[in-house]
Length: 463
Image 1 (cartoon, helix red, strand yellow):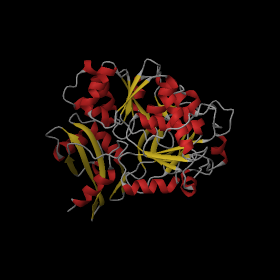
Image 2 (cartoon, rainbow, N blue to C red; image 1 turned 30 degrees about the vertical axis):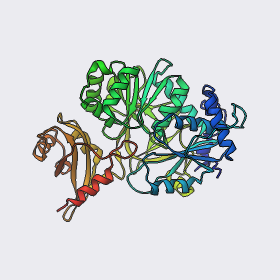
Image 3 (cartoon, rainbow, N blue to C red; image 1 turned 180 degrees about the horizontal axis):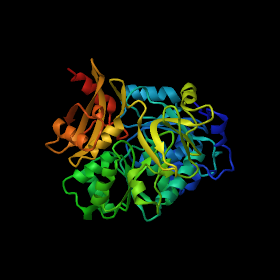
Image 4 (cartoon, helix red, strand yellow; image 1 turned 90 degrees about the vertical axis):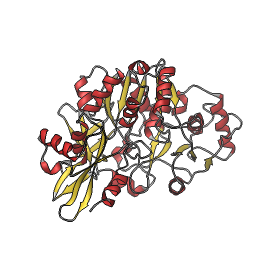
């Protein structure tokens, strides 16, 4: 099957036109020529893959995945990686969306395809990435060479990355964070990447120390587990100079704890599969803004909020160009070309962004809307709490009650929670009515807490 870019609106389509500051060569031409890439591309061509065709695979974080990405781009084919832990049902659902010409099990080998042997345009599709979520089937989000190349060059500059840097990448290469930071940024900056096929805090400490890792990016889960790992010591992570963290649980308290433990610059970042890394702080920005907000727009990004709902709206050259499902694409954009993120946010007068929650992550208790993110922020400000997720549990009288799942030190219970919320002056109806202490939170493939699993657990124990 050959996928072609589809755009929700003329304004979104305008970002695909050449000539803007984001215009640039296709991805592979910016990478060092490698004989392995040429041979794998040749093998794909021998298997019938041509420009615009889809190539799928299911691999953990190994160099074969890097080679497949780059081999696809050399041919002008569309890479469609599937998470290595996806079960048969999810794999079949993903393949049904993109109908690949080839599903790679073993790296193919063939007559080398050198750069320039295949016609590749910056506006051509580069990847189909499957969104992760706690409910419903994942959607295949489409990105062009131009959009991803622009984002990689931009973030290399924003993060101040160079050839002497090294990144540890435990996030799956099948997701936008792994693709951007484990595949594209090393190509744009020349830095080394060390892949981890499976997250292991003890092993990660060894890698950081031996490989002199300077940069890490990911959800707080990675860094909380590193700080809690036996053998953690500041001198073992002294090479790290920059940590960029996004997702649930990136609170000022987390930034303070991680900054102290790692002795590094720790900053908050916001983005998604559809709109990768659209805000963060830059070198020279006030440290307090990096701590207390999710950053300011990068490059040409535009931000707005829906005046009725408070939903964050985004436009910019790195934005995806739609889903495979055209109906889903149309629903994801406003009539004038803004992407609906599904996140609630506030934007300061000077442009700094603070994400306050997900539209769907609202707990409705006795007719009052409660932001799960706000509750979690109060929980994670407590010195005993390392991570927290708040969900609604069914209640015959109130509709829903607030249940808090926390990774916390011994002694944190409902009474301690209620006392803490009262001391912070939090409205009483926002205070959790149940606290469940867990050793670790269940996670989705991308490292985000599995809210659906926790919500189901809260409902199952409802009395």
